[in-house]
Structure formats: structure tokens, C-alpha cells
Length: 541
Image (cartoon, rainbow, N blue to C red; front, side, top):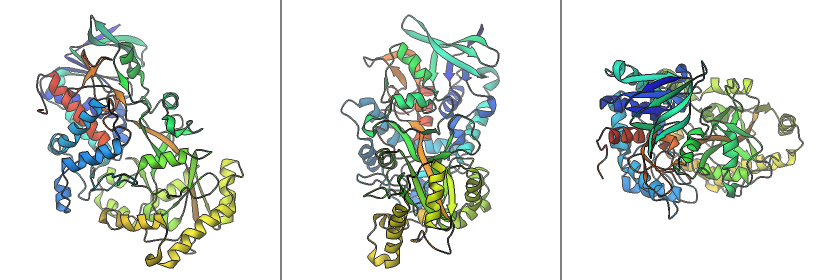
């Protein structure tokens, strides 16, 4: 039996755990971090992410003439969250985040050396209800990889690290330990050697992420109004986001809530080089592509267009008899609009190569398009609609895609474009016109490009699956990040941060996200917990 001890035991080495540990060292507290992954993956899912972060009233916004306010942002948040009457702590954490994200996250990250791209991205604008009234998605220069690496380096090179920090990898935590009513630490096993261990401290912080890496749990907690789970769900979450610590907390009567409030994506494809079962990539769906169901019919009556309402996209795909979809486009559209969310697919930005990044902005990521065409099983190409339908059916092993459905969907859309902008009567074209009004979108959105265009061939069809990603619910906490029991009382010695805590309060997003609030929620909860444990208040009431 190996025995570890420190003031604080942190379970999980993702961005929330790293932030909490860094702040605890700043406050002269000792820390043990127990992470199940290998040292090279220290940083968790944030290391793989694109690195967009939701902030309000920043210098970037002001320079662009955006006069954002926390009041407006919170109103937008609640519109998407649709909180229930009993969602006291989720709502309280939502307000906590909106009113403090810029001061306690944005400016703190700037102090650590993080830089943000000058143009703010506009996502989740809202479809039938208001979403982001203004662009708020601030992109880390260097992607989530840079964010993770900067904070990791700050941690391991901290002046207190030699005496106050212990890092253990391949250590799987299996249960909490308790003395009376106080959580005193954890037990588990070193998976590299098979040796059991205990770790004891005055405070134990759960920072193990959500349940998205456990597809069995995803299916078990599937949101019931979406019907039965899809036959195929791809895994875009962390491989150790398994929900085991949620279950450990519940065994000690801690409250876990809203696990059915997930944030999957509608445009997942198989990773060409998978590192886990059903490993998927999250596409940024091209706005000028037609989104079709498994029969090749356009999903509607409201066409599916990205950047407005991610939850709606998932809901509409899940309404189909077979719960996967197709996007049909051509090479010209793909070259200009195609993208994949994540650090590994945005190499120029990840490597902070400004010349390469500007080339991808101006001319599209052609190398990524060619790579996916050559290596991803979900892409097919053809020079005619009939040939495309045949290849789509060959890929699925069915005759579901009817050539007449493809011809009707593509023909109607292209005919609308032929009429000219004055006579557009297609909601997707109106949405494209809307997005092109903002400079952050105009440069990466085609100007009303037809699908069948001899100068734009070949045609491309992308088979897309629902992709598991974030868990919006989680371990319920108060505004100090203390874990609450079923009666709403703090559990002495136990804290939860990041996605494990539903990013705050057991689900601060409610049922939907304004995007960019995941990394920010991890950092804010990590800082709040550390300061409270050290006897301070990061945010005054």
C-alpha cells in the first residue's frame, strides 16, 4: 500500500484540476494530484480542444464596437438554459460565471501569458429563442493545447512545486475515504504497477470531468424527449471521463444531478487514427452544405445550419428514423468552409504560425480537406448526383439514399441561388446572408455557392453521427464548490470543480450552452475552490 498526504488531494489532471492546484500553490497549500492518464496527456480534454472561451465586455469586443454587458449575457444564458424552478445552484452559478468570467478568468489568463485572437467568433446565435446577442467566443492563440501547456508549465515550474506538489500518473481513484462525516481522501490503485494506494488531505477536490467517455452511461442517461439513443454514438470526450467519481460521491450520499443534460454534437465522424473505441471528431459543419437525413432528404422544414443552435441540430437528427445524417457539398465549398473543432486539426493556430493561420482564413484549410477525403471512412466523392447516391449507399450497405431525393434537395436549393439574392426564398440562404454580415464569418462562408457547379466538383457527401462530448450536469456544489448532500448541506472536506460539477452547481448551463463556457467554467471553479479552501474568497457576494 502506497500512502500519500498533503493539504489537498486533487483527483484529475485536466484544466480544472491544474488550475486549482496552481492557485493552491500560490496560496502556500500543498497538493497531491492523482491522474489516471499518462504524463504525456497531462491536461485532459482541454489539451485536445479548439480553445474558445466565452467572455463579456472584453477589449476585443470593445475594439469591434460591441458593447456587451453581463446583464444582457445573463439574459441570453437563461434563454438557452431554460432553468427549472428547482435549479437554484445551477442558476446561481450561471450568474456567478457571467458576472465574473472576464475579471476572474480572462484577465487572470492574460496574466499567465495567454493571448486571444483579436476577432471574436459568433456562435450559438439562437434560432427560435435568443442566443448570443453578440459575438463572445474568444479563441486562444495556440488553441486549447496552448492554454493547457501554459498552465501546466506554470504549475510544474512553480517556486513551491519542489516542496508542495506531488504528481502521480496512471493512478486510478476508486473510492472516497471518510472519518465520521468528513471526507478525508481517496483510495485507488496504481495501474502501472498494480499497487494500491491511499491519499489523505484536509480537502479532496473531484476534477475528473463528465460521463461522455462512457457511452454506456451516455445511453443510460439519454435525454428522453430525444427518443431512444442513436444506434451509433461516437466518442468525442476524454477516454477517462467515465463517471466513476460521480458514482463514488453518490455512495456517500452526495447529490449528482442533471446527467441527462448533455451537450453532444450532430456532426461527428470517425477519427482516421483512433485512440479509443468509437473515437470521433467534431466537424464544424459548412454552412453552405445541405444537411440531409439517411434517405437523402433535406431535414426541415427549418434547414439545419450551424452556429445558431447546436441542441436543435442534435434534436432534429434524433427525430429521424435512423439517427445519423449526411452533409452534401462540393470541393469549392469544402475548401473555403470545412473545419474540425480541436487542436490537432488546426495546426497553424496550435503552432501559432500566423502566416499559415492567415492562409487558412483566406483560402481555407485545403490540406485538412484532402486529408479527410483520403483517410476518413465517412467521406465519399462523385462527379454526378447519381454516382454520389450510389457511393453513399455503398458506404452504409443499404439502398436508403434515393437519387430522386438528392436531385430534389440539390435542385431546389440551386434554383433558389439562380434567382438571385432579391428573390431568395430559402431559409438556409437567408441564414448565410445573415452570417456574412459579420466579418468574422464572411471570410469563411461562401457567397451563395451552388452545389452542382462544374467549376466546383467533385461533389462530396459526409456521413455524420451524434458525437458525445460534454456533460452539462454533474456533482452539485454551492458557490464555494463544496459538494452538497441530498438535503443541500455541504459535505465536509469534499469539493468538485469543472465538468465533474457540471461546470458549477451541478449544471450551470441548464439544458443548453452558449459555447465557450466549458473551459471558462473549469478555470473559474478551480480558482474559487482553491481560494475558499485557503480561507479566502475569490468573489465577494
